[in-house]
Figure: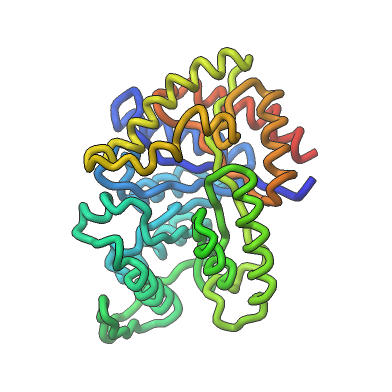
Length: 343
């Protein structure tokens, strides 16, 4: 079996309690992952939707930095077209310093046109904004004075008094399930993670590895300081003591999560993502893993063996799952799944 590490992905979607309670309980879950030796915690960024109750990832991640010891963490991903890149550069540097150099920075153009529209950003023009914003961020972390004159951003002689602890800057991630975007990620050596069935993940990773090998020695790779990229699959997971109990609890919890992820789309009478997040399809394709420890062991082992990934990124808290249900699920995963698939 391939060498593999484990991480946690999170939306912090609206749960069953207060928002204050949601934040506090999530920090406890992350501390559990930290003690269990998880590599990373990855937080989504969403706006105008109950899917994202931590719309400013940097704020919550600052709390993560102080609540944990070893686990690495970061956004999955900052939506670069929504930021002033100078301000975001300073936030990234602060997070890296606060955590003792544990920041892992995911970047994206954004997926939902309706979330981008909340800020007056047209989804059709995000590619060039993303590219220019990333250029500014890299300049800001690499140089003592920031100068940039571009189409979307202009800075002249800005002193960069704060730098990241990691040199030249924290590792970068590019999440996508688009084959063309995988080529971009591989050319620059980004860490990579994707949703989708195992067959799609395998195709994406095969393409990534091929392109990565062709560009391994290019001098202009954006994430070239990372020698071995993490190639991950993202899965929602719920484990209970029996298959029947797990399925009963998770089906109800997923209904709440599904309403959150589709709400903003449905507000605009758009049902384009409905099928992508269908419960029955997800269970059949094993993008949603639900069951007893023995069932999940089989599914995770199959995912690793058939996809070629070296990183399993799991979500343990979603929808109407209670904190007790999520923590029990994570405990079972740590005690009865990870040792079996890595031994």
